[in-house]
Length: 300
Image (cartoon, rainbow, N blue to C red; front, side, top):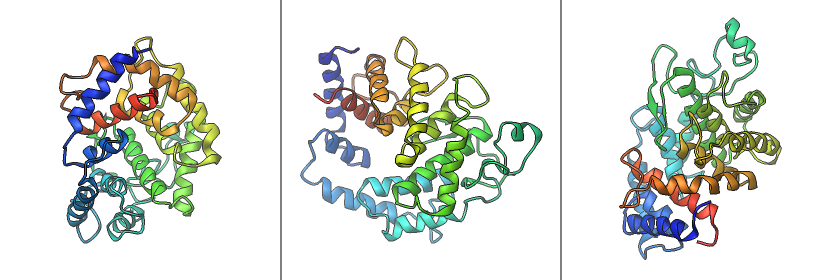
């Protein structure tokens, strides 16, 4: 476990880094620290206005899946309600891609049928692009890069599922189908080494965490698996630490909080003097780290 003074120092560095940053991450970080700037409300509205203005008539950001889906998350973070016209346009764009050609689980072959990851067992996934168009490698907003094509399509769809659930669309049949499919796949996640990679399981865990009480047993099971696979240094072999910790925080579970606490020393060790954790997804990873540190030690 980290020394409370060391952890407090890491939080202080992050507070200095986010102080005055005129970005979504800055607004969210200052709110988490209970130190909002006087103009953060106006800043959030202006950021939301600019982000909404960048949408194409079809509701997308440049026609690309990840920026478009992330824009829904950004707008929701900045206080836009789910029925806001910009958010609604993005969600409509996303809905058109549900079960479209190129979605994870499309088609069937002997190997995928045996793993129950074909159209006979799962569905509802969002297609980030047609099946003929390669999308990997792709980096998600949290800095996690997916290099394998199926994993990239799965992770992007889970990011979309999280947006739909955050926007209150969890009762739509196609969204339910997606969530049930992730739940069904999670029943196979019994070890860190196997057909499904750790980062795929983490992406699924994050989506399941937003699914509500019916999925709580599955969330507890996967969170316990993630906790059990944590190395002695507090990190995870073959898994991105920021994506993993972000998903654990989303569960809100005691077993996840305990794992986050064990990860704090390694997190602090990787912090730069300016409070960040490297150039990759710099502000987003700093925000994730801040949330982890505050969640791991509520006394801060």
